Image (cartoon, rainbow, N blue to C red):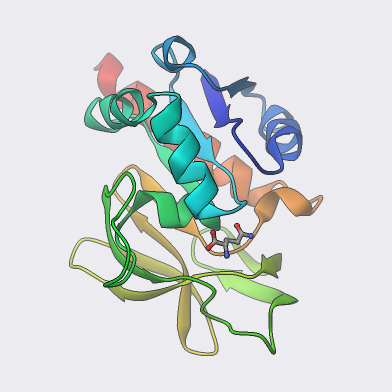
Length: 195
Ligand code: GLN
């Protein structure tokens, strides 16, 4: 099982370290040809406009969409969540536009630019130490999207089939439970294909 971490910006090494702890092979990917043999992909946080531009520049849109069409799980954290959302507000074009969520960028505003919260994340943990950094939240989910966690009534984690999205940075903790959950999604998707 080989999981790629999109290495255009963000805490790539931290994601790789936690994925490896789950027993997966994890690699940094940046070129189109490195994406084709992946079983799953993590899109880290950073700055979504920048990551979006780099995805275009390196011609990664189509290879990522191809992974999605092939049923390979994709996990977007923070800016990565903005990248996969179908709707990021009226002023901005969506980037990859694959998950049926409407995202509000920098949704927690100035007062709570960065904060930590102990979070109940459905099917993952009752007490996950979630780190939020200028985090977006999910304003609206379409049918078929399962809400996994909320903070102050705002959705901060969701799943739709093989897509997983979180507002926070699970790579900035020592807690491997989120990565273990994603690795399990990848394992299951491979098992389905083998049948
Ligand atoms: N606010 C950033 C954006 O809109 C995301 C922040 C993050 O990934 N930590 O791209």
